[in-house]
Length: 144
Image (cartoon, rainbow, N blue to C red; front, side):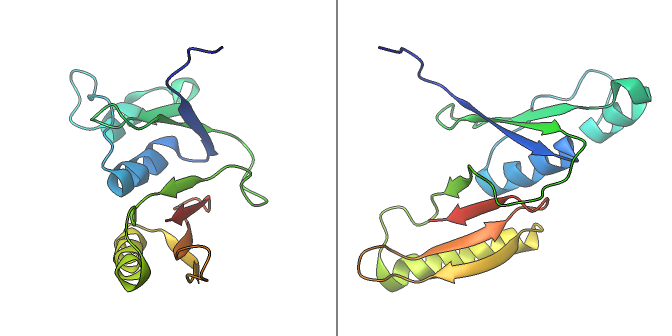
C-alpha cells in the first residue's frame, strides 16, 4: 500500500513564469520568494544569460492543502485537447441557479485574467452545471 500523500501537477507550456502567474491569480496560489537583490521574478529572469533562462516555475497553495503546480517550458506548442485537466471547484456544494451564477461570476473574473470561455454545460438532472475554459496558453480546465 502506497504512503504517498502529496502530488505535483506539471504543465507543459511556452512561458512558465507567465502561466504560473495566471494560475496564482486563478487559485490564490503563491510563488516562491524572489531571489535576494531583485524586486520581481521578471527582473531576476532577465538578469540570467540565455542558457540559464527559466525552464521551470512553480507555485503552491499557501494553506498547503492543494497540489503544487510546476510549469515547464517545452519547445512544441499545444496541439490537441489535454488528457489531464484542472477542475477549479468554484461551485462546490452549490446547486441550480446559485451554482450557475457563482460559476459565471468566476468565469468573468478568469476571462479578465486572460482565460477563454469555451462552453457552459448546463445541469441536466444527473450532473450539475460546469464551465469549460482555457488558460492563457490554451490548456483546458473546468469550473465546477
